[in-house]
Length: 481
Image (tube, rainbow, N blue to C red; front, side, top):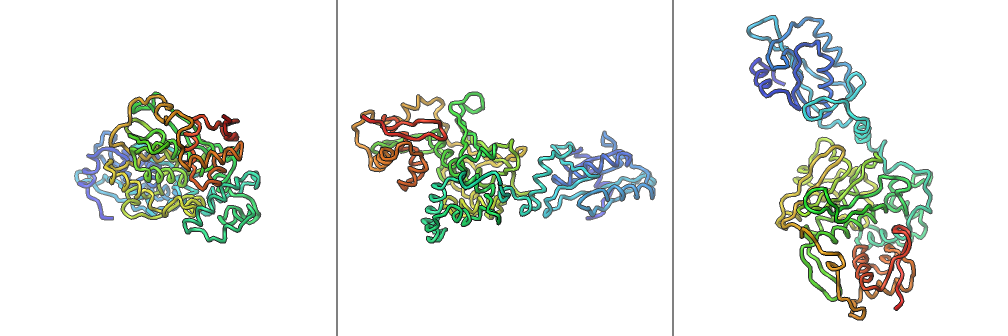
């Protein structure tokens, strides 16, 4: 680093204290200055300058061997160790006075949080604050993901009875059809062998956390954070709900529910194709799918208090994802040069092998490309405390007030109207399997769950089927005419 002059100091001080500049009048405030230095190391880097008053007047201070020794002693209180040069800039009009300047650069390749005197600090705007324990723990985990990886931790409270076998079968079948899983995997009849195929058990045979959130029958019984909040708000602010729900299923079920919710609320126009309505989404469906995958696959799990959400307004959709981009990276890095740094590699691999993810590392690029190709403004990725928010704005606003869903989603009212073959197939499956659930219908029909949900909505509207029992454990039954 070049040697500073007093003119450099004046230029820096003229900009006032900021997220990257802290001034102190003397080294009598050395401890406070070093806490700010620690915050710089954990945030965006910055300068600590002694010899400047709170009113930004450069007055300098006396410097002795004791002063230098005190600074060196305080620098040794940083962990990990820092290599910082203190510059002593003499004032021209008072040769015995010096300004002391030190630059604390945030290392690009170190994620481990810095501490000063045993405590971590970070910057909140232009103020220095103690780093919350949750943030500190998260950075420790990110620094050594192999050692602290949440998804790989064994869960000794769960058993094979807590796993949904049908969902594993569907995932393997989808992966074989996509060419990402060897056909021989179809011959794995034992549920433990299927889990081992995805490396979802540890050496002792215990289910990992990833196994539960991916294929669990009721994962929220183990992890309260395994859910997604969905909402359609009236207008452009969070004042009035038009519709809201919470998905409590496993990640594949959450994926299907999010897509179905978006398809329900985000159409601009529709046409009738035999019995089924074909809707045009205001955001390309591929962009919605990619954003949903990012929300589920790349979220952090360490805090039970963080819940992902999808909020639809008249003019935009927002995906709030627990966690942030890897330290030192931004969304632009993944747009310019798509690459993969999955925070949950096991979960990512299962979704990739299932055929739902096209390729690792292209999600953000695909979201931006799909939206801009459709004439939408470039999606915005914003860092919020403990979350990353993706906002996609609509080219045209959604209808401010939709009529009742029974009218919007209505089809011909007559039970005797012609029903296309796909809907008839679903009806026959339900007739032959009273109490059947959506995943089982999908497995028997070979249709995707969003398609099944659309067909079920049609059949229910026509009074051909009904749902009995609780939302999570009940099933569908044919109505006898």
